[in-house]
Length: 167
Image (tube, rainbow, N blue to C red):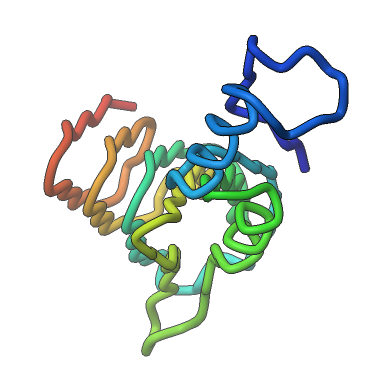
């Protein structure tokens, strides 16, 4: 997990005092949403369903599906959270989850990203799936790229582009 401080106050002389203009600015900025950031990458392997049907829903983030000669599904999840403090960003990061399970004979993946007025998060997904897999991808806020699949592809994004590339 990496944390990056988003604000630097050039008026802070480093004397340890919270007085003056620098202290005043810090007190104002501490309540501003999204001033701190945390991120983490995760790798998950899932058995491919016998039906070779996958449904993915990502509420906020890019989703890339790549067909390969393989028998399982590998999901790379890059989660990022921004909040009013480093602790709040880490907490939100832990709340961003990839949920997966079977629905009938179809494997479903769903990304849960909690949203609050002063905190934002997203998860970019990169899925490596069997080339013959049929996929149904829905993204509310993010781009979709699907490449190298022989199965049926259905892809919808509310706000961004969808790009499919042939095998």
